[in-house]
Image 1: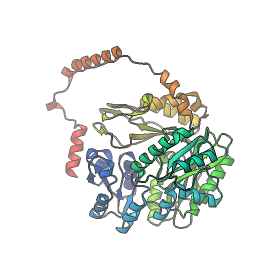
Image 2: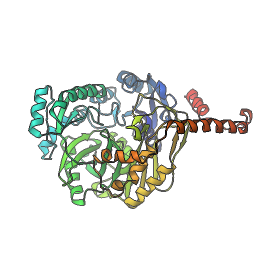
Image 3: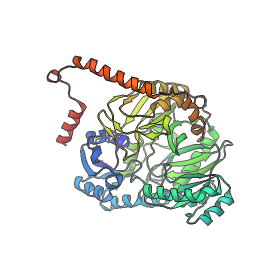
Image 4: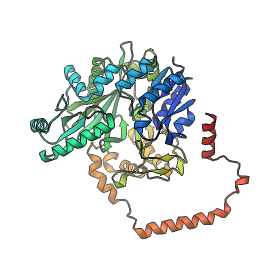
Length: 500
């Protein structure tokens, strides 16, 4: 087993990985950009090293610097988390060339399944249905137009080198095509250093269903069930749950079998996710395979009781999976809500600033995977994900009510967050009844917006004056600094950073 693991990531996923490593008695190494110097993942790791300035390209995507740190700290393995370099086959290969283990699939598998067009080709050979579209990059407007005419509008332009909604555009008419292609190429280039794009048919009212798979080097491939991921904004997931309230047992088994077949066909190793689109008639199509840990992996952990990060580490160390397909017996229902630093009532505009107060929810069946603390500065340089709130219950209604209760207890002050918006989604009839698709959020967004009281300038000014008056009234009652024995978060963070 590994003695020391470097986590090539930041935020809540880095914290999540460090927690499992601690339980396994494995030392951890964090990397951080200059603005992240006192972030939670840095403070709880055994070692931490700066990889550069704020921009991702100069820090968390700085391959050369990360490789230097791997050798400097003598790490046995690298866990890439998700995002950043997690699906970069060149980075995975470079890590292995240093003699350090890569906690993930082989570089060949990452290259094949990470390239959306190559993945489509491989999946077609297994006989699984795929969304109609191209298997080669679209390089000209003429080719794009001919393909669109063949499969019919609306269509999707997608980035070949990555996911997460980056480089994706919906095209409903021919005159939108050229501009959308240019935008998609530009966005894909910035996000993945790969401007290749391809075309898929845009399905109406589909469900986004994904199957969690796991494979080891001993020919064991297992499905851990599905996750329903249809509540999305800008093609990025906000809310996930398992089991899906939409699909039945027959379809669940069929999707799991196909996911396992695809996993075997690409000689997979570790944790992966095979994603499908399922239309309202239960017709399903392969969408893509993510060769990494998913953001929403905790809900699978909650219903199966399996630590997916621990299994990733053990499998990368050459061990067998600790469970078989017969051992996977999901229990109850789990829901995840992603907490973003953005205003859901203002077109999900990102919010930056200093976190001045945090109250995390607790209680039976509540789990919080966070990557923030009081006093932390939220910058515009990285994904606005602050953490994930997960609830579990014996049934969907119990899990849902716990989520509503937990969100009501949740408070983050100093920045705007998606907490109030998500709370309203959970209380909406469409989610309560489990009758939603990937289009539901766009449908109900305006409806939710109308329920929020509009504050005019006079109300805002009055609130600010009231806050100032309240502050001055409380000020004389504050305990003098000389008698105040409790350390501040900033003092603790600074002391830890100095000791490091």
